[in-house]
Length: 236
Image 1: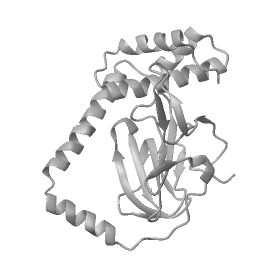
Image 2: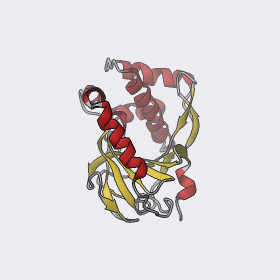
Image 3: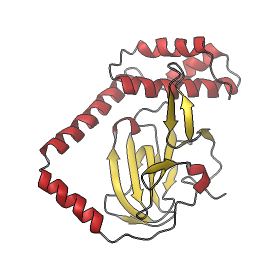
């Protein structure tokens, strides 16, 4: 895709500012996604102005504000829980996790979606469309219709399965002591924390929750606490 010019990016930002969002991280994430969406429409043959309108038309009236409210509520709830949880309980939880017997599974090795879906944003360092600040895109974005089944890319235990701010509905699978995988912006979650899953099990469906401009799956692979390129773990 041909990247937007600086002037085009500024026009997208000015249009986004009309929504009067106050949470800056959400603004930055939405701007990044909107610019990518505009580039996709331009690749399909739309001129810039039409492409920008199409990108923003994916959102209904007041939808940006709803996303911001949901994001801030999720962050507030996390802070409240951590503030109220006694230190002793935290220590017990940490200890129980550290001494639990690891379930040995293969590393993630299949695509999280069945079929031939397009990767719209790769893993790696990318430049913010406006600030030019370099930032790690921690996974890959795969464009797919809402409701498309999401698969566990290896066996393991569900350690996270709920709303997660900018990530929308999110699931994290702990495969073993080395590997985890994460699935974001889901429309629904079909698993629960503590549940064991096998490679290929359906864990939920593609959606457009959180800071997302169109239905897609943001997929991450974490190795020893570090984000790595998921594409290298996806067998054809």
